[in-house]
Amino acid sequence: MVEYEGPKGRLELTWTNKHMRLLSKLGGGYEWTTPGDYRTSEVRLLHDVETVGKVHGKNDRAQDNLLIRGDALHALTALGNLPEFSKEYTGKVKLAYLDPPFNTGQAFTHYEDALEHSVWLTMMRDRLRQIKDLLAPEGSVWLHLDHVEVHRARVVMDEIFGPDNFVGDISWEKVYSPRMDAKQFSVSQDSILVYSKSPGWRPNPFVIAPNPEQFRHIDEEGRPYRSDPLRKWGKNSARADRQNLWYGIEAPNGETVWPIKPNGTEGNWRWQESTYLERKDEVDWLDKGNGLQPYLRQYADESTTRPPETLWRTADVGHSQEGKAEIKKLFPTGSAFDTPKPERLMERIIYIGSDAGDIVLDCFAGSGTTAAVAHKMDRRWVTVEWEAATIERFTMPRLTRVVDGTDRGGVSTASFREAVGVLPDSVTPQNAYDALRALNAVVASGSIEGTDSDPFKATLKVVRDSLKTQMVTEDRWGGGGGFRVLDVGPSMFTVDDDDVYLSRWAVGDQLGEAVAAQFDFTFEVTPPFAGRRGDVRLAVVDGFVNQEFVDYLLSSLDPGELIEIYATGVDPDAQTYIKQALRGSRLVKIPASIISSYRRANRRSSGLNWFGDHNSEESE
Image (tube, rainbow, N blue to C red; front, side, top):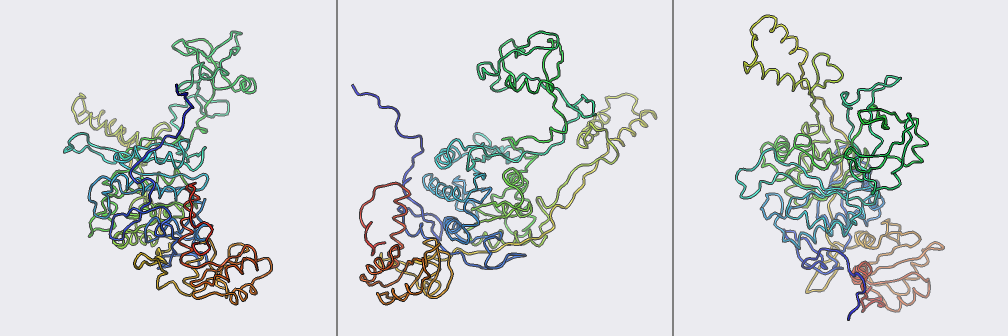
């Protein structure tokens, strides 16, 4: 008989080639490759293209709003590994919103959206892993999907962020009417999966005006309040749920009161007994037909917020057609972007997950809605888009209009209803508008007798005048700020007959900058050095390095400094010499050492026990 040894393994989703990586192809589509492939591991440089509006100086360019043109994999790698950007973004992004291709099999005009399940899952897993490193401890990631992949995506996000960091699954009502040509169900909603970087994440609550009808009591100081039972109700309100919240309380008439529910079952109180004894002066004893019971006062001026909910209606955040209309208004002569989100939807997401000055990241920019709304809401933003046509036709012009103030759509303005006259405190302008519509409908129906009489007409006019409202539009955005456009640089490698060489452009300082990026050096040219990482200096030599040249570089160091030398040609005796001359320094050959470093990094991160070239300088 085989003894049971206990549970093993973990809950996870598997798919074809899960252990592999994906390489985006310039013409569209993806190519499978092994982990550690230099094409997916290389830290690409970010090159300045142009700036729009007010930006920082070149040395502080990482602090600007950034539109990055290139593949998201390389852009996110650069943000997390180039020292000038890493210090601004690693562990600093407050909100990441991803609106990736949905894998619906449809041929969208501006996106490659026909990815096979395993390709899509691998692509999303790799992006989410990169984003996790960029998120602040109090940050969150919002993944916008439809019904095709959302169930699989949630399992993948559980693996990456942990199931305890799942926050919610938001249903956005993306259409305002059903599709009558649907063969089965007319799909009305998209899903937005929300995960936090760390447990205990707290969203920004909505600010609301208390309903005066719910706060009818007035205390001695004139403050409106309502009475809520001290007995807990709803979830976890049974005695069995919290035994320490079941205890008797002495009422003013001397009777002992227990938290018995209206159906006669045993419940519990909101407070522990020690808390009650400390705060019993705050308790009101009221008899609402079931004997004296303890109540707490909830004041109107302390009830001005409510938490976000997971069902978002079109009336509150807009719908897909609203998003298309916003794009059409900006670009009336072009074809509307196929999948734009309304600005009101993005406004709610950004409000809930960030504050003014926080960093918002979107690595599938599309028409630029996330960046546009983040800019209008005084957030810093980074957005990435690879499709050159999309950037040229939509993203770049749209963000330029946001900066110069000519974008008057979306959340640039706000419309609201206000009363023409004075309404009672308990009546909102919307209440008045609805009441007037109902009144006019009843009068028009002819169901009321005597409507032609002068007294009725006079009374009706007074009522109508008192209920009159009007729509008012106010400006919320008039332009300002700016952004910087960056290009993901080309690869420093080229291939000829399966052999990897340095690209022709990788010479001189450009080679030095590229090498510095691969090994976390801050690029700074102070001949004969090309960078610094703490007390380690970087020297990059496009040529042959022997012992004599090593001595020259060592003589240029300050006391306490080490050196790493990367050269296209290396004397093996010089490699041995530098190890003995200055312990902790090294001389290696490029590009072989760079390619090998990618493989070693992947082995460490995967926890595999690999064998081979682990002790060869030449293969580093």
